[in-house]
Each structure stands twice: as C-alpha cells, then as structure tokens.
Length: 332
Image 1 (cartoon, rainbow, N blue to C red):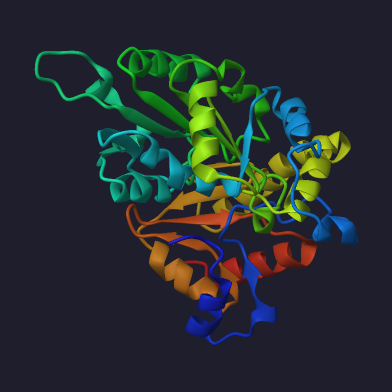
Image 2 (spheres, rainbow, N blue to C red; image 1 turned 90 degrees about the vertical axis):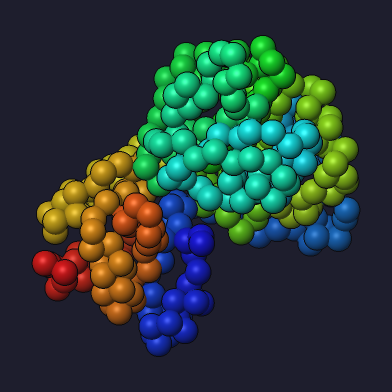
C-alpha cells in the first residue's frame, strides 16, 4: 500500500474529497510552483537535447543521469537486468523494492533495520547477497548511513559482480549525505526523484545514475520517450531554480521539527523521520489511523511494525486542524 490513496479514504470514511487533509505521502505540500506550460511543449515530441540532462548534472553534481518516469520506473526495471540471485531489502521500508525483485524471480531477504550484517561476508558455503537495496534515508524510519559505510558495502559487492542500489528519494534536503559523487564505481546505482522535495510527484520524473555500461543497458530497455515533453520542461526549470531550493532546505526542517513537537505533545513522540515526514511507532497505530480518518486527516498506517507516518501540513489552517484533531483524540 502507498500513501496518497485519498479517493479510497473518501469511500471508506464517507467524507467528501474537499474536506480532507492528506498527510500520508511525505511529499512537500508547498512544492515548486509550476508555471503555465507553453502550448508548443504539448505539441512536440520530447527531445533529449532540451537541457534537462544538463540541469540534472548541475543540480546533482553528477553527470550521466538517465531520466525516467520516477524512481519507480527504475525500481521495476533493475531486477530484469541481471539473472536471479539473492537480494537484501530493508525489512521496514518502501515495499515496492521487494515486490519488484521477487516478481523477477530473485530471492528476497528481509534485513532488520536495513543492515546487511554478515550477508556480505565470505565463508565456505556461506550464502551472500548479490544485490543490496539501501533506502537512504529510509522511508519510513528515516535511518541514514555514513557514505563510507555504503561505499564499503559497494566495494564488497562489486568484488563479485554485485550491486549496491541506493534509493535517495528523500535525500534532497541533506545533499551532503549523498553517494552521487561516487557514481561510476562498479555496481553502484543511485536513484533520485523530483516527487518528494520538489512536490512534483504527479509529473513522474526521476533519474538513474550508474556506471556507463549499466546506464546504457537501462536506457536500451526503456526505449525512447520515457518522459513526456511537459514533464521534461517542468523538471528542467525546477532543477535550475536555486533560490526556491535554498528556501525549501530551510523551511522543510523547521516544519518537520514543528510536527515532531506537536506529535510528542499528544503522546506520539516520533521514532524516526526526515524533513518531509515523521514516523511514530505505537501499538495503537491502527486506532489513531481510524480516528484521524474520521476527522478527515489521512496518514499512512503500517501494520508491521505497528506505526504511523505523518507528512507535513501545508498551511496554517491545516496545522490548526491537525492540532485540534490530536487534542480531541488525546488518549486514543
């Protein structure tokens, strides 16, 4: 299940669409302001020479990013580009990774807290991972790893032809922690997305960074026109807007801190999170989800472990409504 299933919530709780606050996705509620798309952009086929790849290289400080329809497209594609093997995925994390590798015939191994432990170690008859998936920072726990740790894992995997796939969908607020400067090392794959930080989830724009041979293999598998012309036009302008980016990197952590304080005040102290969401483990997670849904506030419920993910309210009216609902449900 994903966040953002607002129409499903409308049917379930019987509350009209206009009367909901959607805090379920972890998407920036005050995203990059999209201007009017010129008519000619709609009328032409997408072209690779439109400046998008150049803008991405400057923004990510890494060249060779392959544009695709959100990082989800890469998540579905990568398992098809190598023979079946053993793939480590976080036990708690974005579940599409596990689904995609399992669907392609790989053996998926759930890793507690996302740490590979001894699955990378050599030894007689010892089973080792062929691919390790790291969600960095993790969604929903928010866990991060030092780049040096990730590069150690990459080197150990690459020594036997393995991959380290790093999903950095929530990395934009803390770009200093990325492993993108090391792209080009064997078996290192990094996924980025404009959906979360830029608030452009509907545009479906992401990038795959990898060594040239793997990048070309992915490009050939995807074929032409992986992004629409309007999506490319919007993504280029957003990646070039350094003023907006700088302001968002100040505002989002402040909002996340405010959310953490609000939740803590009502007995929901976050267990983890990022600048775009807070994660709360509680045995009453399902009850909180239901009761907040009755108040027209949609959050993300996780059954295992019992927990909730709260995204950021987008305006003062939404902050006030969330605070009012939490106060009404104290002791839920």
